[in-house]
Image (cartoon, rainbow, N blue to C red; front, top):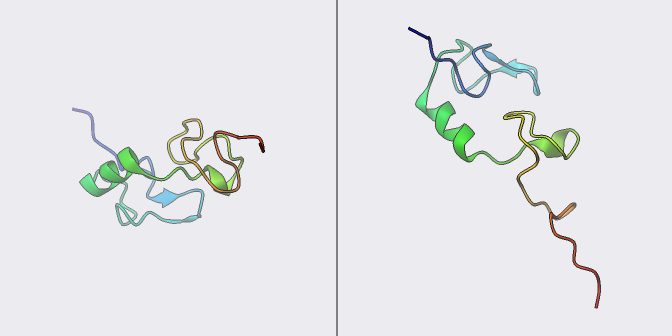
Amino acid sequence: MTEQKCAVCGGQGKILLLDTQCSFCNGTGEFSKTADSYMKSHICQCIFLDRITCPLCGKKCHHDTPNKPKVLISPI
């Protein structure tokens, strides 16, 4: 049987981006419904790094920010 791991820290018990203990699993790395729900609907964290890839899920940027919107509309 495969052991489930915390969706936020990947079972490491530490959030590497912040260099802190994972608050979703209290540093144990064990699966929690809270972490799983958070990852399904989290706000993209790419604003902390390259604005291209989310460091939490590894997916391409999937948010809109006032500093760099997804759709650029030229002035009329």
